[in-house]
Length: 132
Ligand SMILES: [Zn+2]
Image: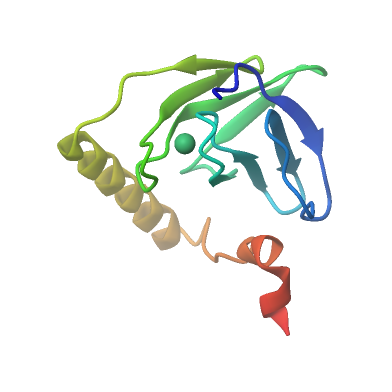
């Protein structure tokens, strides 16, 4: 079942079970996670970073930018999260996906050269058990 809205929930620890229709946000770990809005059950991790996603929160609903493209999932779903609402977008071709990945890599390299945005330390939040 497709989800039509995502309600924000600010968290400090990875939830044991993710629920559909909830956008979990950890500000201190600079990441968000939600279950794919198509209903496939895949976890969608969107880091909050200058080269990845930014979010706005008006006290009730969250918007994320840019759009969410789940190209690595079988569903390949593509949607925007705007004021907590899911706006479905057209699927991308393989060429568009590759071009998008190239842009991301280029921005990452730029930031790394400037000494910013490095480290995947936020992954500790995603996989807490791997710390030990
Ligand atoms: Zn999906």
